[in-house]
Amino acid sequence: MRYDINDLELQNMVNNIKKRLIETYKDEIDGIDEHCINTLTQNFILQLDQENIDLDKLMDQHNIL
Image (tube, rainbow, N blue to C red; front, top):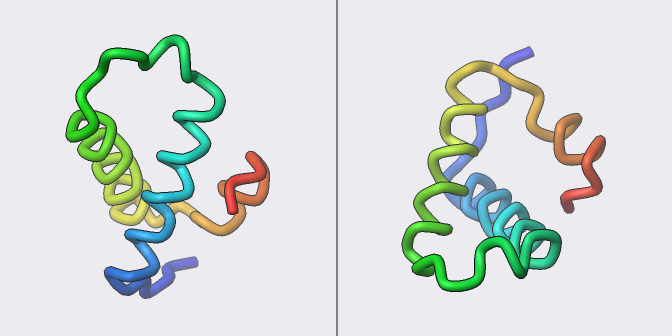
């Protein structure tokens, strides 16, 4: 199913995934520039959106809210 997601919703997903990434992989990403983490999470969400993946289901499955 295709969802129309606005920019604010996409940014909220980016923020939630970024938060989870930082909490879960704190030691592994220590020293990585903030803008690299931002770019990674933004690109991830945009790619999922373009592939028509159910983002809500994916985030629910991984407790990313």
